[in-house]
Length: 242
Image 1: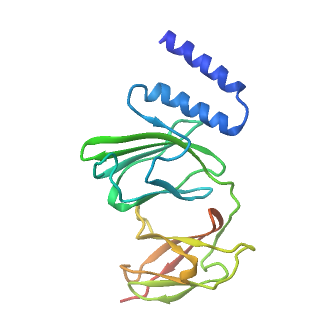
Image 2: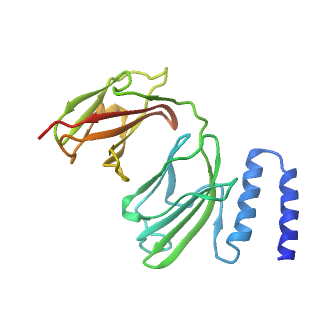
Image 3: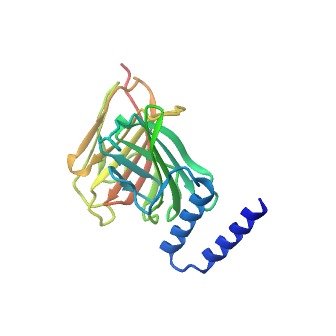
C-alpha cells in the first residue's frame, strides 16, 4: 500500500498543475480508472461509446438513451449505470436498466457539476461493454416555483376520475422558445412515479391515464429550451370521484 500511496501523491501533484477544466476532468477520469478499473478491460473517453447518447442534460437531471443495436455482435439484455460525483466518489445513481427501455433518467444532481459515469452492458450474464466517461450538468438558469395552480401558459384542460390532460399555449417562457417539457405525476407517499415522460412542446398537450379516483397527486413540470431548463414547477391536483 505504501507504493500505491506514493503513486497517488505523484498523480495528485500532476493534477494540481493542469490548467483548464477539460484537462482537469480528463486527469481525474484517468486517475479514477487507474485505481478502480485496472486490468478490467474498461474503456475511457470524454464521450459515450457508439449507440449511446445524452438525450437530455439539464442542471439537475440527465437522460441517457441508446439505440436498439447489438454491441460486439451480441444482443444486450440490460445495462448497469453508475453516476458519481467527482468530488465525493459517492454514487448519486446506481442501477440496472432493461435495454428494451431505451433510456434512463437520473435526477437529484447538482447544477454546474462534473460527474463520473460508468456504463456497463450485459448480454445475459456476460459483460460486453465497460466504459468510463464524465458529464457536466448545466448551470441552473431555471426558476423553481411551487403552488396549487399551474404556471402561466399551462392548464388542466381535462380532469377526470382516472385520467387528466395537461395543455399549454404556444408561447415563449421567460423569453425562451420551448422545445419540450418533462412531466412527472406521483401519488402522495408513493416511491415511484405514476407517470414520467418527455413531451415535445409542439404537441400542445399530454394525457396521463391509469390514475386512481379521488386521489391527490404531486406534479412536477419542467420546461426546456434546448438542453437548458427554464421552468421547474411543483404543484398538486386531485382526481374526481368515480
